[in-house]
Image (cartoon, rainbow, N blue to C red; front, side):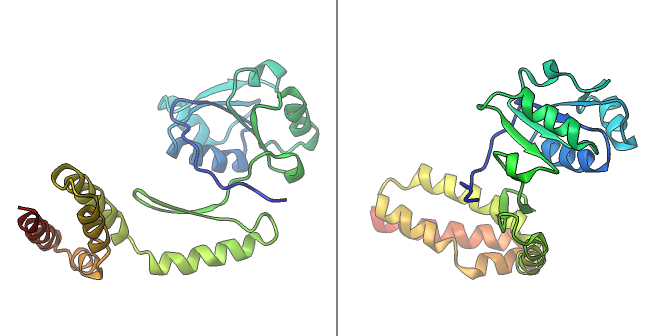
Length: 214
């Protein structure tokens, strides 16, 4: 199977998870991070799902699955412990709906890769089902390289990029500054807990560029 890698915006999109067990709970947790509008359908639920429902982070339907449950869904996850029910979920969908079936990967039109999150940085790792363990190993290797300081680094880069676009009109100079932001010195300052020095160094650089343009 050849997959097209894509990042989905699920904010306020109707997503339905059929199943209320441990597997469904893991799937729901990632959908919550994406701020999806989540409905969970199952006769029973884990403690976590019930707590999320009480906190109004999702809604639940305590009942067996029915085809109407997925009628208006943008994305559906079939995560019950019954292969028969999971197949019923698949049969209830139209071809334009996104579906992930936990025990029938050949019927899925999308899969959920192993991911690394560092604030605004997201890295997805997939072996297309060939070796999930290798994907996990690669994730662990990358997590050692991309430590938690990358979250603050990305925040700094985002602010700096906005400032460059606001102050520098010349496209070539903009590109020079964008490339300058990748200088390892900035990440070193952040790892040292010196964000002020990081911002000062950038301010001095952008002033020099503005001076050359005058």
